[in-house]
Length: 468
Image 1 (spheres, rainbow, N blue to C red):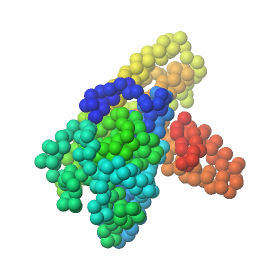
Image 2 (image 1 turned 30 degrees about the vertical axis):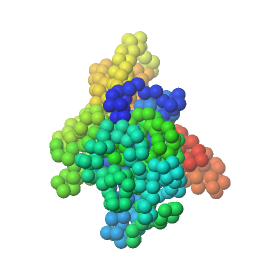
Image 3 (image 1 turned 90 degrees about the vertical axis):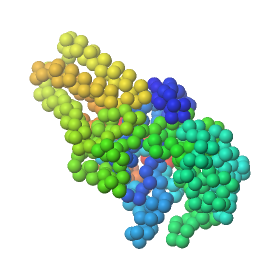
Image 4 (image 1 turned 120 degrees about the vertical axis):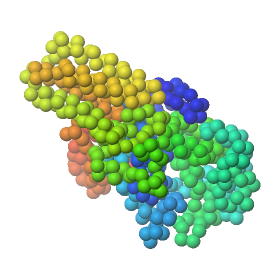
């Protein structure tokens, strides 16, 4: 399997740190509003990457955070006259609904920045102790020039940044030893949420949040760090500087970034009036259509969102779903049970579609070509099945179609669909039953979920679930 590593600017063979396991961190959204379709692209892309690793038998520890303390959240809270906590909790819940609609698998862990402050304070202190950070009037800054490899991800030169990248120069420039130094901790302003630290009551900088949350839930070294290409600089560059200085080892082996999404060939922005939320899209289309649309291009290619392309995606997805529905209808009415010798030979021909699908996915997760392989399977299925086909032949074709589309997160077996929201409700009910020592009910819920293909795993962090 090969993937494109932003660090080396080339495709590299994937070799995990630990055989059979993948540790993956994906930067999640800042929760101050409904997520927009730009947020949706990395969610769908890297959920599909995770699904393919699992399809190949890897145990994937997938961590994706919610940034629940930020200037935008505070601004929204002040506008509404409520607490920042109320805003972030509201939009985390709304985000999860949209993710459910897009069939994004729940992460192994969704850490919240506000729940990990003590770890961030500890990491900042480590950086101070090692000489990589310093405090001025309650603000802690990172000494960018002290980290010799700064710029290795974005391939930017520090001296060029000094002269050309004014966007790096944040407030408090006159207090810094160097204008390129960035903030690790900042003192609170009036009306802002704050936490205690040795330097001031305040809050962490954005970059340190992900460094700490990745370390806590995945360890000091991870296999893959991913996100949108807008995060390469300065966010991911600063994460590397912090994590590698603090931990003394390579942070992530592979860095994956998806390209931008445009709307009608223009950059999405509120000022242009072309800002589209996932919730708005859901009022026009099943969010499975949005997912199919996102996977119709390679993740590193810019993608243009338009009504025409969404309609084309809707029609394409319907072709796959209709093929599955037709197979189910034929299965229900099939008279012969076992495959004939000729059907066996026919089914053996489907190996080529599986090989094409896997070859595409293993070439830097080329979902566009993987979808093409699924369409080839659909065409083959439609051409080689009829009322006289055996139930076994039809079932094998149906199972194969479901197996491949599930890797892409596309739901073609509509009757078997169970929403993540419903699963979570049943898990909550099971937890309540266990607390009340009603173990019969708890076991019944586990069995009910198992019958629907959902496996539960009790861990110290809580109950995790996955599809069988």
